[in-house]
Length: 401
Image (tube, rainbow, N blue to C red; front, side, top):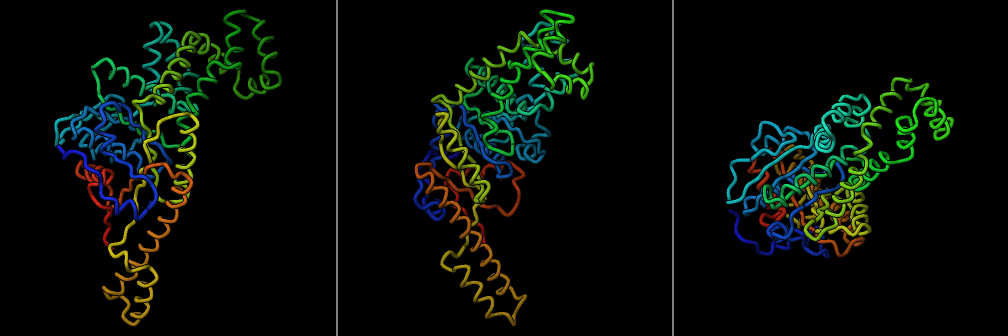
């Protein structure tokens, strides 16, 4: 088991975010009152790896942790020592500590199917599950993945509260164009399912026959005519059958979405925004920080991932480049190549510091922790463990140049 929490060294964080409070990751993970950690941010910033590393570190510090990931990459399963991840929690072996770790990957359609099976009788569930419109909705409708991520979180939370599950749930939010989709999409799906369009489609089951055509025309106007021509009568019939069978579940959708949303606002939940020190990723992180504040959701801080650091910070990029130019006749020598490499990485580190400064200036109260840029991808528990150590401040950001 890793040693008890002590404050991390400040030099690394201060080099990148000199004015920001320090995000104390071990303090967060060791706080038994915190039962849900949600990792959010733009796609492609290492959010899934960060979530897995947090869950591993928590488990090796004695917690019963489960990580729910939305990323289908096989590399993560391999990093955890598993053949594959699916919709059921799989135990991770090889931990160094007294806790336990399970991992799972959201199967959007299977989670939707489970919800239908749990809240409808067998006959109605069969009607819904075999309906072509439902099959399309459960597989590809915009917002379904985000809603089902929250649905699965609700299931894990219920198991945890019953004493049969875990004392920490780490959620890797779905990759999306905007980090705000995780909060918005469940509401959009719920609004669709109990909106005016659906109520109109319910009319044939209630008033029947020709009245359906009149009601649909009245409610949809010109759009209904276009819809019929584009989709065809059979698709509209499938949609009508689906809606009639699904009617009893509509309220449950809204109720569960609202309950999980309130859970995310609770005192035992924390959000971690993960970002790379890049313009677009930090812009997304800034939007998310502001949105979390608007929704009164508890933000723990920012994990700034893949930070570049130079071994010789006293040698600036300009000085290294000037020295390389003086060695121009000796191009190709190890010294020349090392000077150019140092100049390139130092210039990158300078750009990253400037971008981080803009974020911390805009959000001065947000705690920050940095994670160094690694030379290779994470491919095993040791790699995840090292990421966790860097997030906790146990290992300096140290990328040799």
